[in-house]
Image 1 (tube, rainbow, N blue to C red):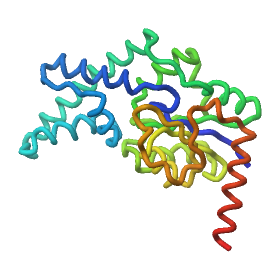
Image 2: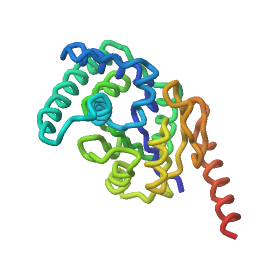
Image 3: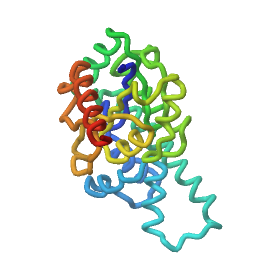
Length: 245
């Protein structure tokens, strides 16, 4: 029986990545690094989950000679950049730069009306989640979600399943009773590794990813309702039984 829907945030609930990109470039400019990520560069860098991890990966690619002795200073620089970036992103979201993708609120409302639980499983920071959902849903947004897993509670980033395993544990539900919603290959890998059927809604930054193994790939959540989800889950279970036979 379907009992809960678990949502990724960036790229899934909202097309946030272009605003994140602008926020990163603002931080780089503020710190005088001389970096400026293009859309093409950022699309490639999204293969690395987590903002600090993404910056660290880029830094090391530009400075392959860096030593472990310099690691502490580098970590402090990444922390400072991430603080500047996060503050700029929050201000942009509060200013209306981001809205939820089509069909998100309708599916959440339908799920709640039928007694299903909602949860969030993301690698982004609590500040980013709150900024987005406070503006999109309201000050009481947290009350809608039985569990929220984020970068502060699950530090091992996707494609590792840590955040999904944490959310399932917090909800007290088996993966077979939930469906995950993602937009990227890393997200699909993380959800699948946790045993979750996953619906993918790609965006401009992830449309080229390999989504083999997804329950369905749809343009956005206007193409999804609970009746369709149950049909897709039933069809997937039939296929699994036939394969096992």
